[in-house]
Image (cartoon, rainbow, N blue to C red):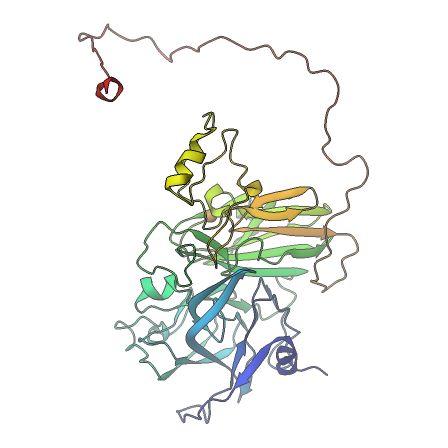
Length: 463
Ligand SMILES: [Cu+2]
């Protein structure tokens, strides 16, 4: 039998020895498991504690626990980590147990949970259990409900997971810096009755954003709004794993937003319902169908749908600059401008100069040298050419023959003959154009009393 521990060892987790620290209610610390890669790790069914259907964290993993006299014990280690955002780009972040975001914590409604938090950061931290009902002193707000956890120290949080649902954890200490450095994680409290709210596939991930200058390795932590890397679980397209599902599966995707702006998350080809929020499960009578749901800062949403239609369906944030990577955020727009020759002249003065094409963006096709450790703004090669995406973008892959519990990527969808958009090769009739300039909503009541004479400054033209 494969235990969770064996499984995670095989999957890349390493146990690190921790000095035994004696505290009330715990003879020793549970060992802290560390993940050394950003692959999606599908957790096995729980070997100890109460049964539940585990979630699958996109490009992440779930933290193993130990049972100690009926208490579910976890060990989180806050520490500097190196996270690969996508092949070709690694970032110095702060996270938990080897990765940012930290591992997903999965418990069952009614579980008594004890979390040891060891601080290996150069400054104090704390962990706030976002959305939980718990004793006030376990809420993790530095200064308000506890002193900060000093570097090198370990604190113990203990509470009963009262409400089933979707939660997050993050520091409530030097928050702007620590969240900008990637300190966050997902928490799922499963219902006591595993058949309640059961689905076939349950994906989870966090939205986070970073400001990383192309060519550098560490986020600028003083940025407030102008971030340039928009991530699902600190990964960007094309580094985000796909979501493979079996046709007919009931699929749940839970998303938590710890960026500094909202994200309209959009699914192609299927309608979904928001079945859960940060406050719990939504009553069935309150749900309506959507294809995009906006997730505000600090919110969590669980969406559900039946994967009825086979194919490779895009799943992404609908803000177009959130499906772009760091390069090119300052590129001027020159659509409609004939810039032949100009770019050449400018590039003699500004070596890295590039312009958006006069026929639109098409940045994906632009070949330009980029600094080391950054990613092209839009990239990704699909079966029909460049996908021209970045950031918060992945693909839901619905397949008839995807096995139950199999999360391996099935490759590109093979479209049945006659079901792909095709080129029209016949005659194109002249399109009639309307010359109607439109009307005003209502007539003006009187003539303007003052006639304005506007003269544009022309000094530049005269020189
Ligand atoms: Cu977005």
